[in-house]
Image 1: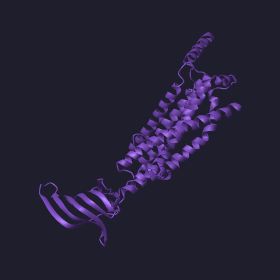
Image 2 (image 1 turned 90 degrees about the vertical axis):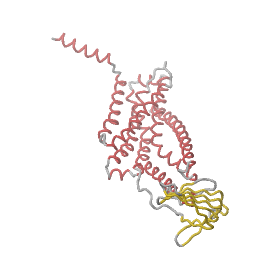
Image 3 (image 1 turned 60 degrees about the vertical axis):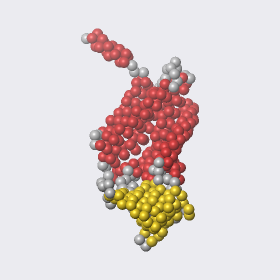
Length: 372
């Protein structure tokens, strides 16, 4: 049908424009946040681009749902304002007849959201965690930056090297503060070099002094040395074995139906169900009074989207804490929204009003009395 094809063409244009804008905004915000984390030493500066890409990919299901919702509302609102819907309704159609063309346009987007939510989302989160863990596991030598105070991998040492003379093997004006085995030591030296000995990697310091203090006491021990060696770690093998639930594959969540895993599963499935419900809600809220501001619908759409996704987030935490079951949340939240949206659409399609309902009830009562 000509109307259906023209509707899908306009939806595609609006959806593409909105998606480009949202992705650009999210990329900019993600870049600023990632650069801030890199400047604080939480991320490897060379991994900023990768982390930004994986983060945007994780946000993509939400961005697709929001872009589709805004596209439906903006397209249908324009058709209402330009009285194009009048022609459609005069041909015997109603708002409910818009479900078919909108679903024909939206099902590929639903499929992409499902693929991203169930497969790509945990993979991108896992890649981000891998990059962070890899940077945290770097050895003490890799942490040393000339002119900057750097903490060791286990947090027990603080290094400072004024400058490197020969790459990463030799430095001048070295400072090391250590807290281990109940002792606090401060070691400073004019220079230092890296040596590989049978016992491991050692930092050999020359022409310096060492200040020791037992924790909890005020006694200090000062010693000077011409050559002093301290062992340094090359990597960190004992890292926290905690695995974030958002990095687990969907199949792993299904195999272990704990409250925490069910909460994450409700979030991933909620991304798909939310996208479907928002399309139906968009049909209902698109009917706008031409005399009102044309941006009212978009403001309401934004409020609805934010409220819906916030409740989905809260539902994830409720399931994880055991406050509500997985089935109950899915039925009450997504099933309830779906039922309310369909009822609202039926009211608009059949032009039900409270006044008409009361008039029909009154008319039936009067007819029953007259018959009696």
